[in-house]
Image 1 (cartoon, rainbow, N blue to C red):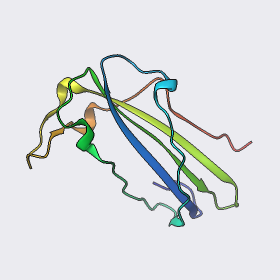
Image 2: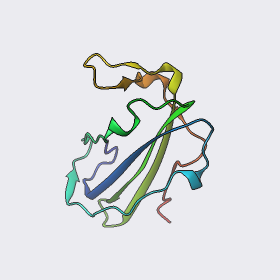
Image 3: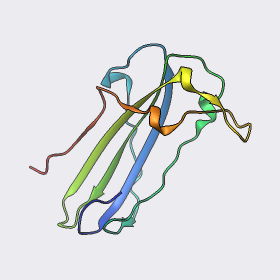
Image 4: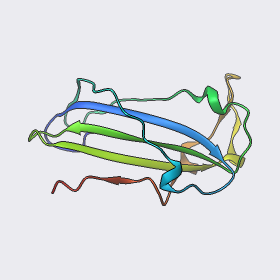
Length: 122
């Protein structure tokens, strides 16, 4: 969601998933090169972005990690970035209602201690 009062331009993003049996460090959460996009998000607007969950369909582990990065140009023409990493307990995964793998309710998400951050505008 764009929390600012000006449009966010040139928005690009990537999201990755991984199931692991241990807590991961930032080195375990690589950010791939992202193709620049020309998406504009209006003030108070949002963009839905998903990722391919097929890769984790029947894998056992202690945690499901969802991490990635968003880059954009702010309303003053300054390039910005935000990295995120959420951790879910894999034990809470249940079969989805549409028989397409597992699902975990969003309220089980926790910010992981590694992999989160943003530029400070300095």
